[in-house]
Length: 400
Ligand SMILES: Cc1ncc(COP(=O)(O)O)c(C=O)c1O
Image (cartoon, rainbow, N blue to C red):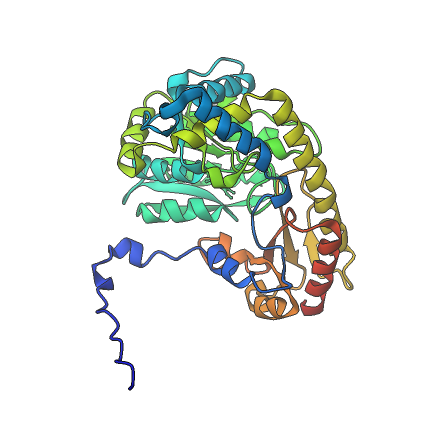
């Protein structure tokens, strides 16, 4: 007996909201499906080193928080976040900005990615303008694009966003609602916004009255040099995003936003619609870990001590490639470096051969609003060992 033909259900995809239908999916997520091939050495991901995820400490925190709080740890919680975590974030923010942040200015979010979505919904829409650095963080680009706002790319270089270029655009009449930067060890650039440019950007925000979003998942992962002050120390128009993802664990999905008092009510209303609140238990676990100063100091030491030699190994190996086909800057922290072909070619076209050779990277075009950036690639150094990084770069050399 032949099996009855299974009819595929009718396609009603025309019902999907037009803006969503035409939005591009994350190139990186699509790519991550391919890098699961056995033997692949991936420089493409953006994940923390798995061996440094604090499995035992999180386990102890889950048990401890359930024991300490009982049903409260599993109950609905305020949209703004649990008071324990908001207080910790406010105190830490105060350490950076020389005055205590108000607990009311802190909203816990489901990862900092949610904060980007909430900010886009609150501040952007058709008719509004948003400025992103080129290259820029893909998750922010996606959130801003879905809002329907006009997106303007301003180039970045080794010192971060070119604030001189931004100033020219502003002088020519551009009036953004929001300017987005990753000030420390940018994703994908690895670049850090210089002190002079931080002051310049803050002055521009004061003068032209836009919100400057400083998204800072990587600042604590500095393995060289001294930290630079936050934009929030320089202008009242800064919104600071933080996350537990890169210093504790991304799977907990706990981030936060510190925003001016005029903006937080809008963000809270939007978050209420999105998910009521971030997981109560996950927030309590993160608060437990962040308030354990010896644990956090050790955790940050382990991350930095692991990432620094990996970053150095990657940069050294890339610079030692036969013919030195790639120019690369050595990052002072974070998880990424940005490499550019000296003889311009589309790295996107090289990717299939690279995957066949067993190495993955993210083509630079993924981080741009247009087709530029094609000669570059993002390389992540956190998940491979120093030896594997050497092998990965050898494989890369065979396809360049
Ligand atoms: C610059 C930047 N912002 C935000 C995020 C989102 O992080 P999460 O939602 O895990 O806090 C990432 C993740 O890679 C990132 O690189």
